[in-house]
Every structure is written in C-alpha cells, then in structure tokens.
Length: 168
Image 1 (cartoon, rainbow, N blue to C red):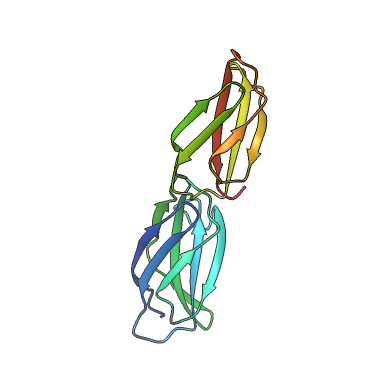
Image 2: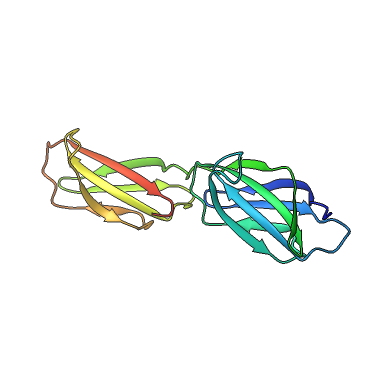
C-alpha cells in the first residue's frame, strides 16, 4: 500500500488562494494530487484536482473565490494506487474594505480619497442622486486617487458607493 502524506496543513489564506503544506512519506511516490472541493465529502462537490510533482511539499491553490469555504485533500499515488490524507479546510479571506473615505466639496466638484491596501482586482465607484438605487458608474477599475467629479449641481444630495471585486 502507498502511504498517504502526513501533517497536511493550511499555511496561508488570502482572498484568492490558499497555501497548503504536507510531509511526504519516506517511500518514493509517482505524484501528489491536491483535490479542492466545496464539501467535506471531497468527491461530491469537487472543484478540481491539481497534480503536482512528487517532491512538492508546499503548494498554492490559486484561482479561488473570496469568502468561500474549501476542503482540500492531498493524496500520493504510485502507479494506479492512491492514498489520501485526512482532509483540511479553509475559508478564503474577504477583500479589504475601503477605509477612510471622505469628500471635499467645492462649488461644483466632488473630490474623494481613500486609504486602503489594494487587494481587490477591481474597484467600481458609483454616484447616485439622493439616496436612490439608480446610479452611474463614474470610475471603474482604478485605484488612482484622488478621483474628481465636476459639473455637480449645488444643494443636490448625492450618494456615493465604492465596491471592490475579486476576480470579476
């Protein structure tokens, strides 16, 4: 029988990847298989299987969704015989929120800045009249600050929203 890897552990969690580590058995193996699933029953909701070199003991599972719980199973294979270690799980991180958002109002200009660590793939800035839900996208996919809007009407109430997205 092929011994499974041991000490499978999550080393790092980010918004779109998880780093796993494990200890390989002393006996040589042909390959290591990392299975990613949405369920503790690994095969029932399998997302994918990554085959990695037989010497790898630290692996980044990439292209994951943020704020999502994943289960990981690591197996060794010799010829057509596999042995799976007990699975481990991790929930990917939440994108960092925009912080310290403020505006500087002039006669017809709205200028804003924000301080954040830019972990999102895309930022979308929306402006609406009043508190209404109908809005226009005034800037998309930029982290450049400050952002300036001109030709606004005095004494008009505007709502402003910043959204951050990870992978679409």
